[in-house]
Image (tube, rainbow, N blue to C red; front, top):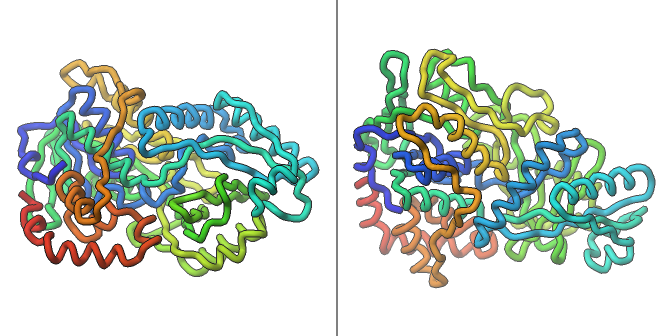
Length: 459
């Protein structure tokens, strides 16, 4: 997968995707595998925002059962099983354990977990307090009456899975480039005909023609839609910020799920550390600027300490933190309870046909979002589309070399890494946190070997 902007000079693409997060990547892959001529551009780098700064779980959303969203949970659990099947190098099963205290609350939790497991085709496992503490001593707390075990899945490197999805799209003919900004929508007689774009590495402008354009820019979707179609009234969203902490290992092998009145949290085993989350707060401003504040970090630590008292010491020894901004369709004052449904906006209602915005949903359901969007769009293409096969087609990705120099060479050659930030993202947040000297190693390698590659990046 190499950055070659001359590919975008093709007479006309069937579909041009704006946005290189998980939804944009899944749309590009599905469309390319169905036989469409596809292009994708990303303003920054692939998976450089919310799609990477996620909770690193592929899950059904057990907390949505309390909101009565059984259909949403069942659908997500089915998609979790798909990811485990098609991306086994990236997604693995993860057992979660949830502490129970006596009383009506424990009965409700048991019922909820039992239903969750049933929807996923399994039976819940209930443990005594003694058995639970033998497995995970960090569950110790006053009033502990037992624990329940359920299954979800873990995604250690979301950015690497998105790269693999894009590599599969390229293998099926897609033209893809990072650091390309969509500056304007091209149209004629009320019909989208492509985009005007800027290569941010060279500041050169070019046009790329397409009969259909989809805006899959996540938390930027409403802003991009309004930029490309001034006065649009179709794409509106609420931005929700979530932060995560990385700490020394809190649990042994299980992920810990904790919940209280109107709140939840988790502790996930991750690369020899623990990933702790999360928050869910309304956000305004540029999603690229989202960083955990000291107040948010203190609030998350306080919440986890209330729900999991034994975690306090390790939370205070945090190794790092990060934040991401989610796109929630529509307007909501309560982002915790806001809909996780997907919005598919046809801007024909705004006077421009052939231009769409797709946002919302969950990482877990991104593949299904792409499938349904292309099924809906299918009749608008002159040719008959192949059937969707992303439910069974394996996502392989590029093998990661063990040698550090070879790893960076692979990133440049096959993963479209160009800037220093790109290379850091290819190495991964976990490795950078576990071994801070890696960042200096990347800079040294770029200074020695990277200049010639950077000069070729736009060609």
